[in-house]
Image (cartoon, rainbow, N blue to C red; front, side, top):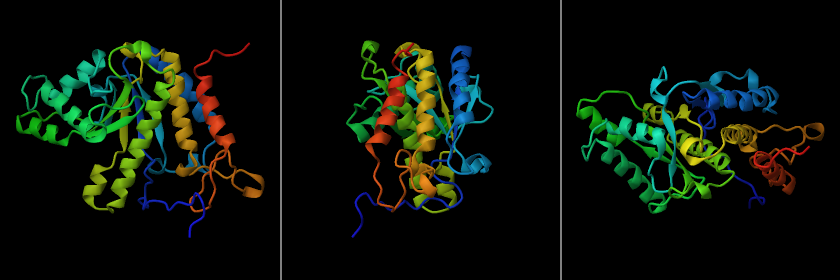
Length: 297
């Protein structure tokens, strides 16, 4: 019989845990890049990291980088592209149009054009959420079938295999965008990539499994622009979700209680029978709330 709350860890790859990947924050606009540097910079210098985290080689760390560039202009093609969207896979704004045209090859063919792109995305949503993705969630869409059709049509341009759809709003009314939707979407993205990599690790160390793993994720400002989330708030919530992901005990959270005992505010140990305390939960909630409420005098 197992203790209450006891869990068995999944068979993670020995060389690289599933939560280790690179997050590339990319946008040509200087405003969001400046806010990212402001939000992530202090975070990365003061972050309460797991033991010896900073001394780990890159392949054993979850990293974040800021790139002042369009996703299509990155020096190398990322494995995954995160795209803010509506609950029905209908992309909005200039970024949405650019992504649809990029994956659609700029044409109108029903198989490889923009229509083919929308069909691929919406079929994935139908399989997972009956066509309507809940706000604040992430769906990983395998674009490989569409990319194969593009290659067969003569379009050899490299594109990310995985598209991470982030549902920011149900439809087009941004007045109903949740105040913490950027945090929710960022958290959902990080966890979706982690779950995907864990599933790949469970397949073993074959070449196929290694190829399918997501090692780099390009991500724009989540909820900014046409969705109406203020840039400073979006940057803070993205940084906070990243911090909570790094600190998550399931991702190697530290033990800093008395005499090395688990700190219930931060730690969840596999097979230790611990459960997260209310203190831990309230701290997370208060952290998110602080990104929404104006600072007190």
